[in-house]
Image (cartoon, rainbow, N blue to C red):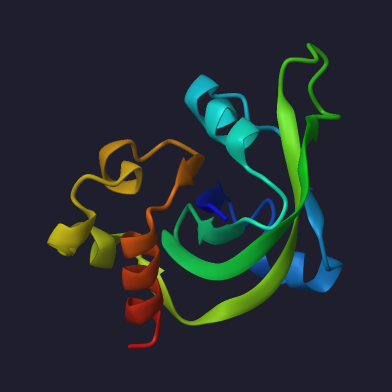
Length: 135
């Protein structure tokens, strides 16, 4: 099982929306590196839901419930999408400022490539985010 971080504008689709809907298909990812990561996502993988915009924080955990498939919003047929379901909101959101202040995250794409919308989360960093979310 791999672990990932997916970013979304909460004004477009929030973690609360995902909880309400029960699942969603993650579409509209066009960046080449983000698409490469999305193609590597598998059913059963875990995902940190990162709210961009004014929030800039990891706010929840989701699970991938389907392997990558063609993105129905992509007319070119080149992009893939995956379906996720919510597992839980984090007890305390983990802000980008908190991540940037922690040397453990210095080499993570969230810090180095801030605009990347899909990225892997190494196990040690996943555990660190989970610990920070507990306070």
